[in-house]
Length: 69
Figure (cartoon, rainbow, N blue to C red):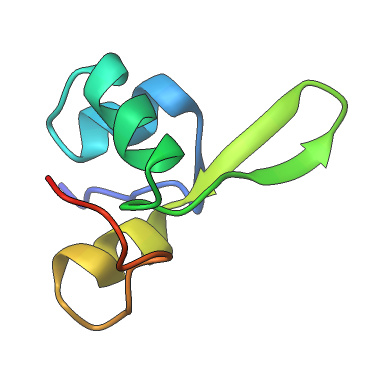
């Protein structure tokens, strides 16, 4: 069976994708360690799965390097 990752993820799905609690994910986004969501329309925000994966793989710069984990 082939597993397909959606191109865009809701906050809870993005946190699950990175195997972390939503509160941790939200904190890392607010501190600049993870990218901000793309705003699609009023009240619709999504995170690009390829951006999250690129950060994990070390193939993309983090949005802000001024943070401490």
